[in-house]
Length: 277
Image (cartoon, rainbow, N blue to C red; front, top):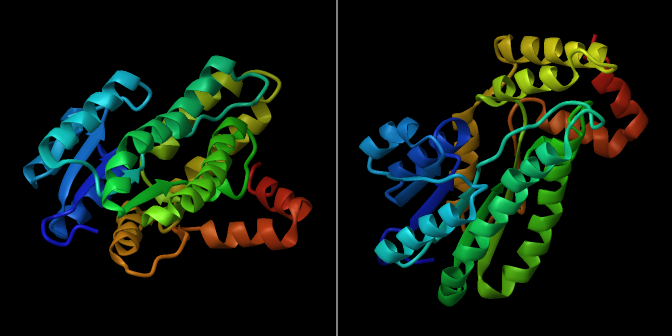
């Protein structure tokens, strides 16, 4: 990595939650930090702290290209890429439109991939760099009504593994972060559209049960981890000489991944469905 001048970090989805906390932590470390999100007005605190804010919709090719060009014009390129932008689309597979499913993939996978493609030439030329992909425990497990969301996170896991091997000879690290239950806007953004899709049809009992379980879980004190906990892990990963390929962080992530991996599908099905009443 570049040791003669501050490294340049680029954080997507930085208007709130894990992205915002990660950007603040990187600023504290003395990095030059670009922050990108659709809601640029919500990044004022980051700008006041010294971040360079760019309005960018990760589903829009022209906005992605423009954002990376701005970084290149000012600082040559990106040293540390934090692919954090994403959201969770829930609803029964049957009742979810293919257009909505495509948009879920556009945000959670294809937009992320396009940002990465544009950042890579600079990293390859320097033979150094770090790419951090924010997956989820949802990339290792599954929940009802989350078929399209989990599909994107499972895809991101495999995509990241392939990328890590492809880029190893160029000195570029690829790190996967798998957060569990984190106190962010995630559940609020997910629940309303899910009930619109599936709250009144043949899956209404399941949808209403899941909505109740999710609301109670996130409202309960201590049921979710602060976004700063994820930011701490990300900063540790990008600044360490020896890094893991994956970091599991946050409430419920390790136990649920353990049950899924070691006890099998049928036990995991029972555990998940026991929470939905």
